[in-house]
Amino acid sequence: MLFIAILIAMNSCSADTAEGSVDNNPIEALVTNYSYNDSELSIIKLINEYRVSVGLNTLERVNHISSKCEEHNVYMIENNVVDHNDFVKRSENITSVLGAKKVGENVAYNYKTPEAALRAWLESPGHKANIEGDYTHFGIAVTTDAATGKKYYTNIFAKL
Image (cartoon, rainbow, N blue to C red; front, top):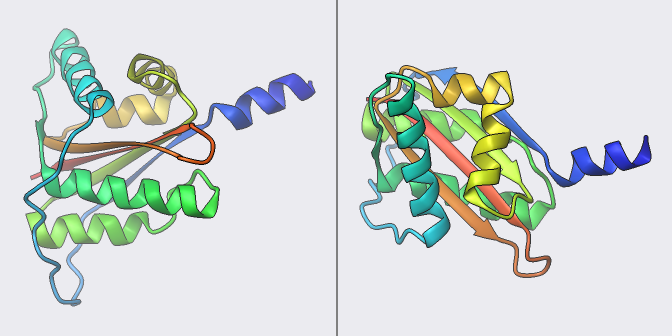
């Protein structure tokens, strides 16, 4: 039983969605530059290949969304958590800056490869619903915690 609890804690992920609504805060600047690492490029390709295999459109990557994903990974690493804290704020930003009508988010932790993270997401109904959702664009960040070597994944989907 302890082994199962440790396994779940070591390989966790979760999903969240929100319908967009614009807040009255000043709009942040659009982030146009983002440098994708090999893991990020791989998971982008894997998600789009999966979507095509089930008859869905491919998603266009958006640097601004990926930057929001990276900010969340940094937050999770700094706070030693895996969660959706401030998802509403990220969603509102993407709605305000990009005009998103709908936003969803998947997070994961401690998967060594993009294939393993995607496999785990597809085995979870909430994550799979986001991956197969009515979205047009997405962003991804895969950030390695320098202290532990473990990877944090944030994947945000948007319908623009």
